Amino acid sequence: MNTDAVTQQKNWNGKPYHSLDHMLRERFGEKVYKVTLNGGMSCPNRDGKLGSRGCIFCSAGGSGDFAADAELSVTEQIDSQIALLSAKRPIHKYIAYFQAYTNTYAPVEYLRKIFTEALAHPSVVALSIGTRPDCLGEDVLELLNELNQRKPVWVELGLQTMHERTAAYIRRGYPLSCFEDAVQNLRMRQIEVIVHTILGLPGESEKDILETMQYLNGQDIQGIKLQLLHVLKGTDLAEDYLAGKFRVYEREEYLNLLIDCLEYLDPSIVIHRMTGDGPEKLLIAPLWASRKREVLNLLHHEMKVRNSWQGKQLQ
Image (cartoon, rainbow, N blue to C red; front, top):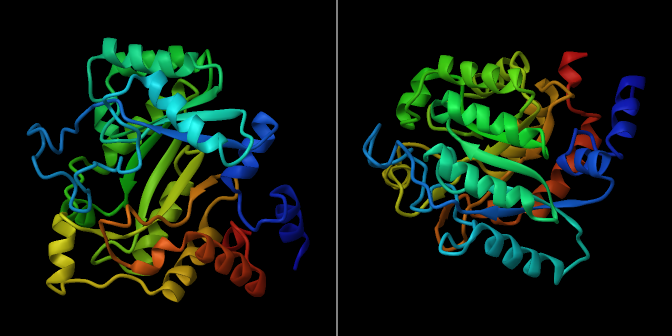
């Protein structure tokens, strides 16, 4: 292993990539957990503004299948999840993560109410908001800028891919230029940006996926989620899968691709996720994805065997 690799691994507490856990421990001095919240919002891809069927891979939960009950207040949602998490381990700090659907798709007065309530919780040290680049108007941006002066605010943008042909197939509903404008507007306000990508979208080759990684190196982003494509019941993607129009990755294929993606990613970008599965009752394929701990252990082993680390191909 060369000197650069040793330095990187030392900086990341022995892991060959810039992990979210390492970043949080550095920033907040201890382990931090996310509580997933539901702000009761919809999405322009579902309510008729852009479409009514959502993105092709999106379940009825709108990416918030693991989020709390929207019938509860924000404080009640946070407290209920803290009670569950703290029963298993001692935890003192949390990130309030608005996950379900599009979490800036509401009047700014309502957004101010729920985001302020989340940030006011004494155990919450940061706010993370999952949304679309086309749902960040000037009034929303100014609200996020104001909140970011109190506690850190992160915005998670669902890009999935840089390729417009794939974006059309998955019904993303906005052009790449919209994403670029959103990143620029957020970074002008010093708001951290986390980008969601999906590995294994139908019709995309490994070359296409690595082009998305290299593209994101050129954007001012601070974090990335590398999401394995999974097929959920009740989605249009499931119909195509069951019709034999595409296949999903086997575990070894995915691990190889994931390592390649990490090697092409700028080492300053924090890795927030490297797999994903969806609810067990909805998951059609790949079924191996539900064993996430096993997948991560295999990834760490394989990267060690290969003398691999994040950014290796950029040295």
